[in-house]
Image (tube, rainbow, N blue to C red; front, side, top):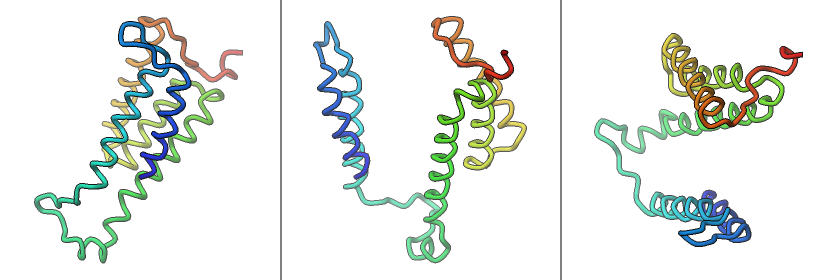
Length: 149
């Protein structure tokens, strides 16, 4: 229900930005639509009962084994990594920090093999940098400022 509460705030803020019309959309139209979709999905997720997947542990077994804590720990770990990424981005630069974030997320959260994490990080970071810098003309802080001076 935290998502619903946050999205209600986004709804009001997007209305203040101005929704415009479908022919002439305002700055708040897409945040408004995304907030509505997120509210609907959060309410559906809260209402629907948890349906165990085939081969999943029974709820009593999962509580005893601590299996319910792992997704929460992974979410907290990933949230901490994204927060550190946001704080360090102006100082470290997009390229190095994004590669490090993807490698850490792949290894520690998704339990990927290190070589696959490195390849994924290098290719995806390079492609995103290429698309934004070259094709869209949106500059990203590529390298750390201390390396450029």
